[in-house]
Amino acid sequence: NAGVMQNPRHLVRRRGQEARLRCSPVKGHSHVYWYRQLPEEGLKFMVYLQKENIIDESGMPKERFSAEFPKEGPSILRIQQVVRGDSAAYFCASSPLATNEKLFFGSGTQLSVL
Amino acid sequence: DQQVKQNSPSLSVQEGRISILNCDYTNSMFDYFLWYKKYPAEGPTFLISISSIKDKNEDGRFTVFLNKSAKHLSLHIVPSQPGDSAVYFCAASETGGGNKLTFGTGTQLKVEL
Image (cartoon, rainbow over all chains, first blue to last red; front, side, top):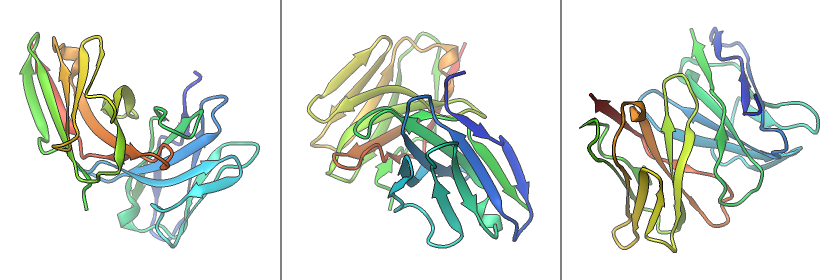
């Protein structure tokens, strides 16, 4: 499967714990995007990364959230000290280029905070 | 501030008929528009796109129309098939914004036999 791979598919955390979401882009894609979908809402942009660089993090909450896309390995979205409001579906997408290219999305990680 | 709006949360159409999904936007800087289809427990998959220099783009059963003056676009599916039943998201981006997409809230399409 050469598509975008996200894991885990489901993640349950208690309030105050850390959540780490992983995303392996399509092979050869160097642009990665994270989106969040809250219940009954559309997908909201969080962050755009290119290998080892954060290009646009305008959609990321200022605290507790961070993202990385190292030279080797998957992109990681990290949420520290999770709260109930963080419960959502988190989607990763990748593209080969930076401009006006369709994004390839993964199946998402459903985060549930108890 | 919802810059991309899909005012119909759901739409029901009979198999073989035309499905028309609508989308409005408010940001005049948007110049590239896409439609994504999403099945439950899956990520969105790209369907069709249109640049602001065009007013129509067609791909098989799917056609997207863009009315820039009205800031409105629509997706036509004809003929509709049961496998088209899914949530359809309209999305938009602006030049210089990379692939940062602004999504609508989606329309649940149900194609009935």
